[in-house]
Image (tube, rainbow, N blue to C red):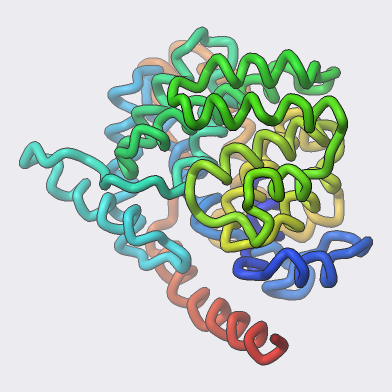
Length: 344
């Protein structure tokens, strides 16, 4: 639920500069902007929902999980969702040709796998290292760059930490050490190590972004998305609003960052601690707030027993309604972009 809320807050703010983000947000309370008092999420949430559905159908095996996720992805890209990256679109088309032996995914370092990787860690926590394997393989369905697979494992580990410490106190330094150990790529591991002094000094995420020369906004590359999502989560693990606002202030073309931060903090504090006004106003369709809550209930403490291992149906997906949702969303997205350009 925290993931969907963060995504809905960030989607209308994509493309803003840090200066504009600071001027618009400031000390104001967070609110949805695509449509008044109605949170509308993007493809980043939908990828996580598809992953959740695939987990339910997986019979607790990674092979079945990837089979059902690919099946959902290939239909999803045909529904023409706004904001879908080119790499993910072509990766979805390649899923239609999997019977030919065509290798899945495209060589790209984009950040599309971030939200579903985090979700895998939350759902599969306390299962040893299986969540890292599932996350790496899941990322490879759309993005084959080694850095993406490594970042997926790190974010899954962060999701596992958030779930295990849910409702309790988080040891930030110990959590960061665990995440550093989970990183195998030297570039990502060194970047995570550089977060230590900032975390000790309780520096703002904007200061960390300046250190990495990302002060002009966070792009859709997996590296800044992962590093800043980890820092925003560890800096404000007990405050959903502060963590999400700090991610929003980083600005740029990156709603996946805010969605991931919202998911991590939401998993740690629990749905009861999410801002009630944002929770109640989440109003997308056909996968509404009620539908997402039903999915979250099914995924909590999964698998529940023999039924989930032998016969594991997902929730109704409403594919025709999903297509209609995406087609009607395009005019709204275009109108919002035009409004932002006129205000600039």
